[in-house]
Length: 391
Image (cartoon, rainbow, N blue to C red; front, top):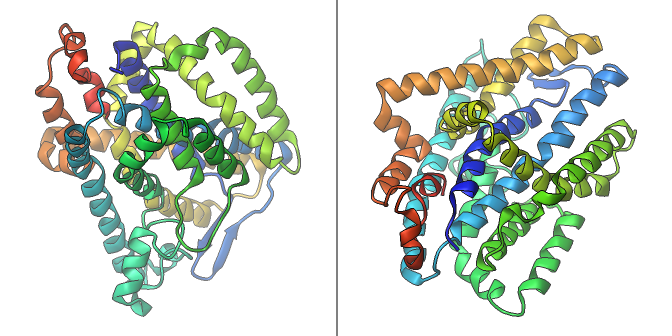
């Protein structure tokens, strides 16, 4: 199945808002771990807690499953062949592996230096990063790639790590989804995602496996992602009600959160379709989409450091103060990173392309036909240029 212009446009429109959601997920907690203990409050006020939970644990939780679904959908677009698989695998070395290694090594360097300096040591304390002066080579490797824990050193890159594993296993996924075993396989993955088994040792995320394979199945079956658009307004209404119920409940029912994601993924896709019809909004979000990966890669541990510094300086205690920092920290950080991205784009484009994988995407796109002839290549399984940049 070839990626059409509508699908490409929706993906471009979604990239930046979904990354913003990820940043808000990582800014949810109201305590920070300093070298001398935790700072912050465990409970601010009911209305502030409701808003934070509604955004970070409600609306924003749709972002990661949708990213995996889109990744699977794009990876299996076009005709499947060993040659095409090897070509896409080579592309992922540039777009996934190299940025993964760079950003995790950068965080390792920052934390090693920060933990060794008395003036900054308190801000670089945490459970995930062992103290630099007591770590050996193997502990660094384990933390770097998240082998002995569920997360790599740069926490958000668990998404990239799991995606790389799924890409390598793509022939197995294709084999299972191209036969009668497809639906039982997807049902089994869905069950694992609902149960969400956990382990202290790294394991493949059930969420990653299910939504990547679901996207793979949809594109192999030739299913349009906009199939549920006709129910878009109804789904958004249901989602809003469920989000209010979920956020207001004192126990936040686990399975209700899963239901919200199930309905939230097609709802977000429908909303992207609405945005695509607004020329100004589409243009604005499409321009911002270029900075998405850079914001994703650089926001953590920066956001952790900013939160620690902010909580130490301002010592927020009221609900209003907590909520103010909750919104100001990610918005300010995102604005700074977008500005930094544009500066690097002008001054160091090759370096920026290397650490974000964007230079390889653009080179790949330049070798493909333009949009006027994109559909002519459908028989050969070629993607549109816009889809190539995303994939």
